Image 1: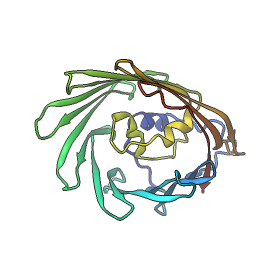
Image 2: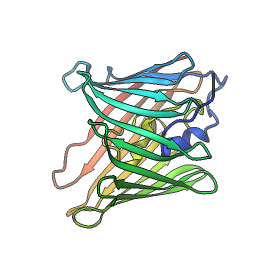
Image 3: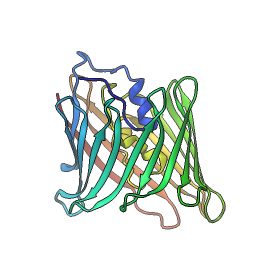
Image 4: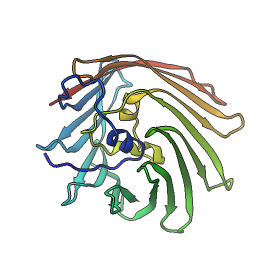
Length: 270
């Protein structure tokens, strides 16, 4: 299997620095299915050399698993992820992300294309000497004005905090997140979805949540909005892959939504 890089921000570095801790015989497995309280929530399909090629998302709110959308991944001739395209369950094109890489083979720019295939925003990324992402800036392609600035803090290649500033109306609003990681994700995993940290409208936390112990989100408002996530009762298989964990979310905001509690289980292929 050829080595290839993938598009992500935080998760990119979690994977890249992983040492497969806890994998006793280092058997390479790949995430195949995720269940929420026993109902299928995510399904991933791979090429013969284990590059993710399609991902299905299922809604579970009705008590059954119902396909809601899917993603298609395409790669360039260097086996680097070139694009991720989002479709509705009825094959309607939603949007597309197209990636360009720097000399270090890390994402340098990503274009966010709307459903007429024109660029609406573009994202620029900066790294420090250790290879950790330190800045992500989002620009409106039509007005050529910056809309979001993101800074990242790290400890031993693990994310500890990110801060986002939004340049809209009012001129700047801020939110931040802090994180606690105790495990790395397998170094042979390669996924697009790490870009949840860059405020993508179609972001996803599946892989980040598999490595987290806890996170705290803060949004400037009157009153401020917060959410605290705790990941507990983690179970691992004989090869060190996460098989089950419990999620707990506590929210505070003007509406004060009720807490969430549920289990997720994970299945793999070799």
